[in-house]
Image 1 (cartoon, one colour):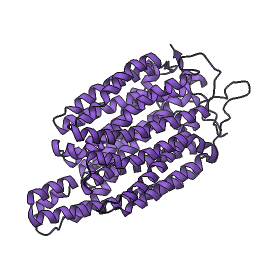
Image 2: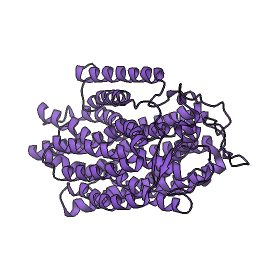
Image 3: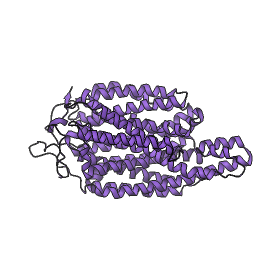
Length: 552
């Protein structure tokens, strides 16, 4: 789910996208979100086919799935601030074009390296699209109640994209090769380019102060270093290995340098003092934890349904459909739930419901159990979307008006980074629990056992080559070890979700909507919607620095 920052309401103006047209603008922006959301999930059901065709290693396979959200997360701040300078609609349309070109490259990739590069370019395109859409959405929905409804529609569309991705990917894999899952982006891009150019309003920030490109690149490199170390661990590297330790230390050092640089600058790329607000920092942590659990579990669940239960890609997409339908329902009901229960109770309830769903799914075994999967996926989808909706709305409402772009970038960065680290972290847990069960299979040579320990798909290939009793024993041991690893992964996820529920106790008790004064004038920029002390403006910046300029 994505959101927009809550800003003080300014006097109404006749601008493109204002009035009744704002709902048309919302539809166009939701199409943009659909473009990004579909690509984030469409590859999940294609992972076995990609593995069979391109023969990627364990780390390469993680990169194929993970490089898209990581590149996107790393560049959100850079392209978000670029849109403030040159025009958000312009950056959005450029993102559409790059997304289409990268999709074509990915579809016809002949090697794992080419596919990784294409997925990275898709991440660049996504980083151009997402902040621009959030900034435009904030501009056309200044009222918090309407914005909450818009966020609900937005999050429901994100769930639709998550549902359409596996289903569409499964259908295409039934009839075409795996590269067809990327070609679906091109028609969406071809429609979005002319429609977006015709209907979306152009807007820019005031552009005071220099654009800190150095800070943006430092943050991007730091994030890459940290996650690369985690990915190495997920690929089976030792914790003390140089290829694990060096990226982690380098990435952490670069992030420290970024924080120190932003604190010194009179016009920082992102004003980190927003994190002094407990509700803001808590909401960011909740988003990371929720996404960490969602994306990693979804990927592992797709592998479980196909490789353990033997379902086809299309059947896998249909089995995952209840999860996304429940998330759609939670998104559409989110605005009403937030007004009635408030951020604290809503996010706590979402985390607890999701943890209950995850614990329910630990009853999964080597045999198919459709009622159990249905119940677990419905609870999982509703609980996670409830959590994300409440956390996003609370975080964005805490940001002052002149920090709207930075808050939107932080929200989307935490969303994408949580998704990327989730795949790597839960993959690490999965590998740690899976591989030991294959080290002493009777009749299987040590080299074959080591190869089978890389992944369940590779274990099936090794078992096929061995044949006979040894092959059957290896296949059975690999399936049982995968189910054991899945249970361990679910338990770790449940613990993280319960930690999120405790963290959410710091959120505001009620949703405050009193942003507009009687005379229609906005409160002082930086005033909290919850009545907390105002966040200081950046050094050297005026209070009106965040007001966008709107052009036809």
